[in-house]
Each structure stands twice: as structure tokens, then as C-alpha cells.
Length: 307
Image (cartoon, rainbow, N blue to C red; front, top):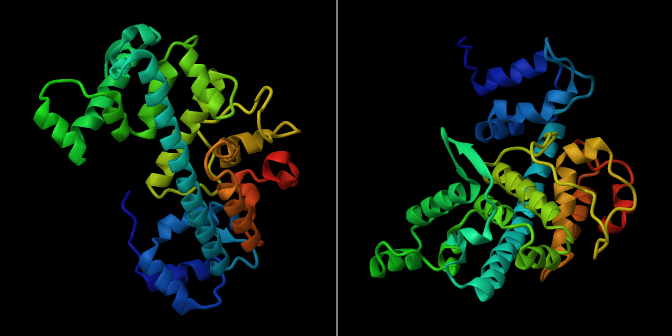
């Protein structure tokens, strides 16, 4: 069913009709010129007292919705910076440890990988081979000079792992690590260097980070989002500060759990406190934003990880 498109003046009128208040309609107009009504809808959904009639609760201000939006945007920027550090570290450790042990083409060696099979696009084959397909596609479409140089100088020859993994996405890196044999010493060493004693748990963490990375890369909201990929929070013998109390399900379902894993791992990298201090500062600067929507429940900042 096609709905009528509203101009910005009519959008504001509709919101007012439904009970939303405005401190500055001119400023709201300027906001709606650059951020779509439908995009902002995700930030005011819970302020409606009646979802079917779209009526807002008393004292719902457009400016408060924009504050939520700005908070979410700034949080995503902080997280993206943290993901960059983690992604580069994991890539480096995969390249280094496995290349020293098995040579520069180890990623092609089937003896290093599990033989589990996966169905994709109607084709069932070993998961490792699916990952190799994705890795090759990323390599082939790369515009990096060193990739073009390899293709020109060595046509048809596989690239050394330090070349091909340099253009691999976080998702592909996560899948490559996951498909390594569980008893491979290097798999455990990589997890250990990131502060995690279990390669299985570490693999789940990488998956959840890759998922949140894709959300951020597409400029989608983290606000009030239920996560499809959730990390295990049962971290045995943590080497760094962690949680003393089990997380509530609402915290695990929301971004808080993955964000906490990222903060923990960043503790083993070059700038251990940067991401955590930025998040704490952001929350302090937006005291009216209900951060429980991200899973930051009461007393979250009393846990050792967040102190």
C-alpha cells in the first residue's frame, strides 16, 4: 500500500498532532532536512503511549529524540575506532603465528581446518572452502596498489597470506579463525594474546564484533537494538578485569555485552583505556539519555571491567 509522502512542514505538524513538543521548530525543520523522519522514528518508538494511534507520552520533546540520536551516533564512532584496533590486531596475529608455523600460504592448507560442511546458495561444501571463496572475492575486487601489483606480476598465483588478509573483512577474518582446527596451538595462542583462554569463546566474540561492525558501517542504529549475534559472557579465569556478577538477559541481548567484550580485549592492546574512557565520558555528557536501552543497566559502572 502506497502512503502519502509528507513534506517537512507536514511532518512537524503530524508530530505535534500526536503530542510531540518542540522547543525550536526552525531547528527541528533543519534536522529533518538532513535526517529522515523514518530514521528518527526508531528513536521515539518507546515514547509513544499508544503504538496503534502513534500518540506520544506527555512531555515528549523532539529535542530529546535528537539527543538520543546524537548519543547513538557518537557511540558508534567510538566503537568503530575500537573495532579497528581489534580487527588489525586479530589480522596481525593470524598472519604472524600461522605463517611462522606453516608458511605464507597456510590459509590454503586443508589440514589446518575443520571439515564441517555448510550449505550456501544451494551448494554444500566444507566451511573453509566457502571462506576461501569470500576471501578471494574480497581480494579480486580490491583496488589497493599492492593487490594490483600482485595480480600484474603473478597472474593466477595465490597471494601470500600477509597480502590477502590485509584486504579481508572482519567477517571473513572471523570465519577463517573459526574454521581453524580447535586443537591447533596457534588458534589458542591468538585467543590467549587477546585475554581469552577459550578459542571457542573468542570465536563467538569475533562473530558478535563483526555483526556490530556491519551495523555501524551501514550507519544503522544501536539504540534499543536486540542483537542477533551475542557473545558468551562465561569467561573462565579472565586475565584482565571482568564482571563479578552474571549479566542479566537484557544486557546480553543488547549491545552492552559485545561492547564489554571489546573493552576487555582493548585492554590487551596499545591503548587499553581509550575506548572505555570515551564511552564513560559520553554517558556522563548525556545524563538524560536512558542508556539501559543499550543494556547499560543500573550499577554497570561498578563492575571491575568498567571501573
